[in-house]
Image (cartoon, rainbow, N blue to C red):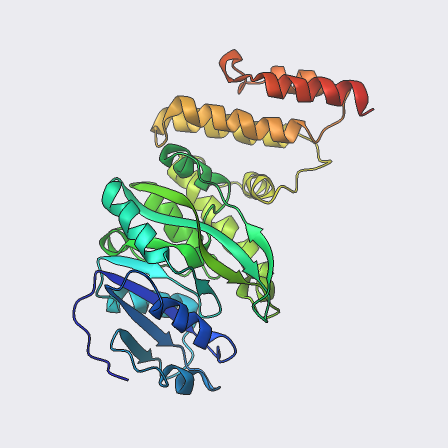
Length: 337
């Protein structure tokens, strides 16, 4: 395998640890791209299986392999990838996922026509351990403005579909130790200064199996997401409060069903007031999205006071009301007793 490459326009980064079951197909999906001006930077994080032997079977000068002497972990390996990348754009593909044939072409073309956007992702097919399609991940493809605001309420990106401007990653400080949610942390920090977007295209096939990081590290994911929320609150000038952080995380996870709504309205009203002072987000659209979040919570509550919850709060503005919302409220009040 020739490890000498010229400066590419795109670096496709793949971190791998004991990935011999799936990495061959992942690599091949990159080499088969319709767009060819890339390097495939693979960092082997101390694998003890046949991963390296499989990588070395490929004879393609665009592949560059770096071996960590021992297992350093994903945060370290991802940050090393940023430092070692040579491309202007930096695309991520997990070592068990499959890139769609036109993925790189679509994302590069989007960046070239939308210079205000510094990060973009897209939809994914879901496949199982054998590669059979089992579902579809349709993600938020709203406006660039809305995508930045929606970062407050969950990660709207499939990490394995992301492409970013490498200099932007470095400018915001790269990956930090927020494992296993370091991708959410990085995307959020980019969204504070630059446009972020999702393309309305399937860019990857996302493999779901028993050894997915999100499956194995759920408790760590929750803790990391709460740390990210804590930073969000700090950026908005909200003092640290574990109750508010918990409520915010419940909104992200949609686990507010059946719970008393008073804490959620307090949080959303505080977010509105805080942004009005620090002006991180466009105020009117920010307030409208907060009201939409409140409507989702209201819809989970009892029918007898549903209109009071909807109308009587600091988030309410008549201009935010839609006929669809009113129809849903009436239907719930009249027919779902």
